[in-house]
Image (cartoon, rainbow, N blue to C red; front, side, top):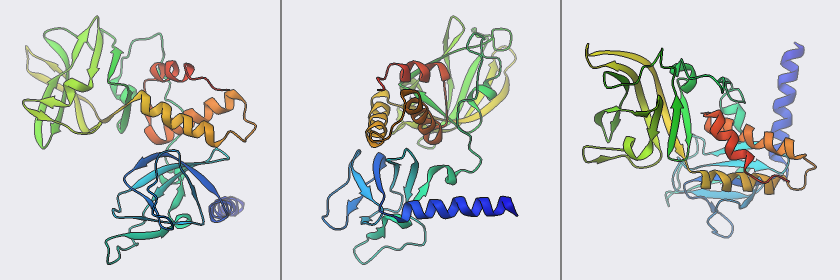
Length: 280
């Protein structure tokens, strides 16, 4: 009973926080959202207020928001809202903003630790089975040569689709590093994939001499521009500027944001990236 009451209290507090006069900064915007009062189109870094109304012409529009207290939210259009005669949805902000961790109750913050000094001996654990984010356009993964020998006979193959056309792509390698490159994955036989996401990639270990293929895992890749990520981080740091957060707390806040929104990533590459950001 105490546990149930505790959960109810957390939900009530969350609702009260959103229902009050709360300012949110737009960290990441997918689609077009317009202020219903002045018809101003919102952009990254703009402030929206929980008591204001906004409009969209596409239900798929969404935005990642951060409050001045460092709490992350997702703005999403509920299915029950309908288009008006102008094919627009006018919505009150406080009814369409949800704590971001509530959208995926099973998600856990923080990276799944992979021993930095050891070569990768389990690609299923390394990539997981959901979404893996690549910072930049390339990723090098050092594989354990005893588990994943990389040579002309045995190598890694990605099996996926580009524009509904099936693609089987041998992944390049060098000095036992698996070389994952966006440019090579997003084009094949005259077909080019738009955007930054490749879905439903089946990862196989293939042996040419025996024509044996072993399925290792199935993943979705998102290639994330480091320039764009830095812009998102800058919005977050600006939003919490009034709070008395220590630099270490701000760094943790940025890490929490990344894992909430983008999921798994190469821990080494992320650490190098965030350590090069000036956090005061």
